[in-house]
Image (cartoon, rainbow, N blue to C red):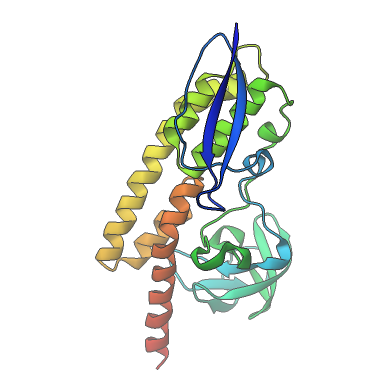
Length: 251
């Protein structure tokens, strides 16, 4: 027997605006009461979508300064300069995990020691964001179970762990998304707990002015938009404090 369930969702882009999603579930009636936020299926397939023209590449090294090398290889004698955290670089190419830059120094730097900063992010720009694309999510068919799973991922990224789990549980066994949904039921709580723990550790590090520790945490932070946005102000503060410290050293 199939039943229809209406879920009232609050959009993070317009407070107070609601949309109603009607979901058909075979076998089991479930309810997700007013989840915190929702994004579109397209966004859930790629949680971080930004225009390259609006984004800048910044230095993000937990042990600054970042060395700029003449060639994309780490060897003695090929360091041609250094960069501070927060410095914006002009990328003109890349190879094997390295970025070729033309400004402010010509050379090569580790891609993993950079992040994207996008103007479209607004006042809470997510400095720790990565370009994330999930081919497994994008390639799912448009059956009801796959739609449930996409919504589950959307709720998870928006900070509604309980809603995400309930939606993942509701994916029927005959859906192409069933294997991913079952895996998500195990990994979502684990990833969530890891992000929460690391965030609280970053808060403690900020209170003790351990700015390098903040950047270390951000470098390997779980890919959950909700927790990344909470961490962003702390990361911005860490980068600013390192800038100030570097300026004092120069003086």
